Length: 187
Image 1 (cartoon, rainbow, N blue to C red):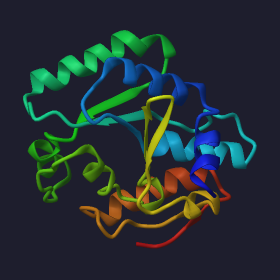
Image 2 (image 1 turned 90 degrees about the vertical axis):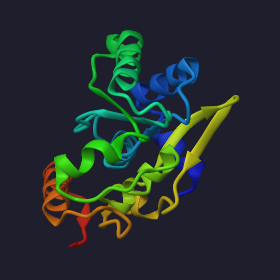
Image 3 (image 1 turned 135 degrees about the vertical axis):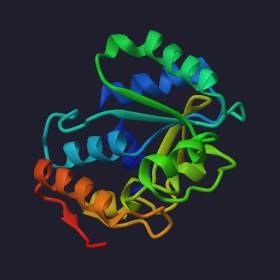
C-alpha cells in the first residue's frame, strides 16, 4: 500500500478529514492525528465495514514545551469546543508531558520526548506507528514502519515501545474481536 492509498482510505472517515482540517486551523504545535483512528478506518475500508466501525477514540498528539496540566487542559478544552459537535471521543495529549504521568499509570519508564513523532514511535504496535497532519494543500504523513502491515491486516509488537505484554494482549484481543480478519503476531 502506498502512502497515497493509505491517506485516501483513512480520509474516507469524515471525522479524520474534519479533525485534520480543524487541527490545522487551531495551529497546535507539532500536532498529528495518530494511531488507531487512521489504521482502523483503513481496515474498515478494506473489509467493507462502516468507516467508523470499532473506533473507540480519535487520538491527537502535539508537542508544547509547557508541560503544565493547565496548558494541556486548555488545549483539550479548545479542541472539544471546536470539535465536540462531531460526537466522538477525541484524546488530546501533549507529548512533552507524557514522561510525567506514564510511569505511574503503566509502571514502566518513559523518557522525555523532543517532538510528537517520538510519541508515535513508542506505540505498542508497529502497524499503528502512523500520524497525519495537514500541510499546505495536502498532508504530511509520518509512518516509519510503512503501510504493509496495515494493508495486510497484521498486528505486531513494536520493539521500540515501553512494552507491556499484558497491554499488547488486551489491545490485540479487542481488535481481533472487532476485525477477525487481522493476524496478531505474538509479543
